[in-house]
Length: 309
Image (cartoon, rainbow, N blue to C red; front, side, top):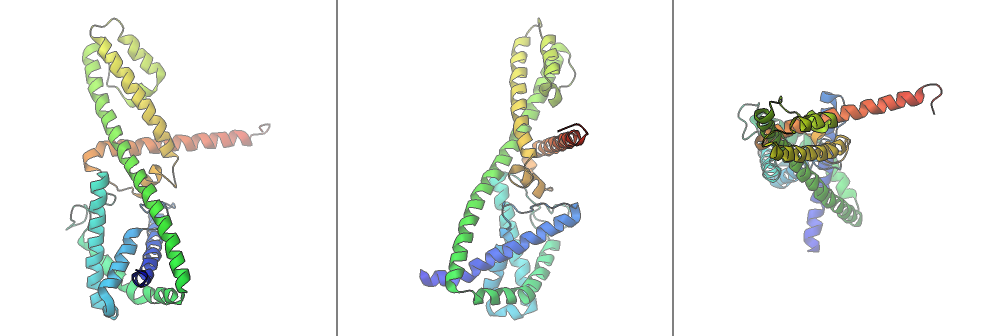
């Protein structure tokens, strides 16, 4: 066991080094495109495991052939594409969402992989293996065995904890998307029923969340035949909408951690089975975030006025 751990130790360290490098590249790419710093990883910590897995798989597959640029290119393109396909498919099966989507590129497979990015992975693999890996390997070899083992142990423990927390957050986001879609469907059914019963206009979430509008609708139902069941449905749907709004207000504040961070980290995420729910969730959290920032600015302005404390 000790011999196996000693042989695996450098590759464990490589996994974290290249996961960090991949995360830095993703953050830099997002910063250039969106002009804001966004943690672009699935995990909360500074690591993109898909890069770590891809690079370790590449190094193990190449063996002594690392000096051959064509071999590195082909191996990098194939292995990185496989890692991306398996990772994307697994996340889709777990959370019913595509966390990245290449559907707009020709030759894509399920939106998870495409030839264009396979070529980029091949070129990137050549750069990493021929230019970046030699100094990383030299640094790793220079570390005392005890320090390397201790560092790997700490990083593995932190990584395991982060994986658990991040998967819980992704599962929570998936539940919120489903709840948003179910609420939208319930609102449409209730709106249609109320239109037939009392001739109201189409109902919106604002109607349910605005106490005055809600009371006006309840008053319009007084004395109407067969309105009692609709009244109960209206009150129940309004309660669900208020509870969901309260939770989404928390999500909207989560810029660097939690479900809100995941929404910002994957702006092109798609949920084919819950497209409406995801769209409504993004719109609601964006609106709530803007409202919160506006209130904060107003409060700061009030505190800065003469005579204010």
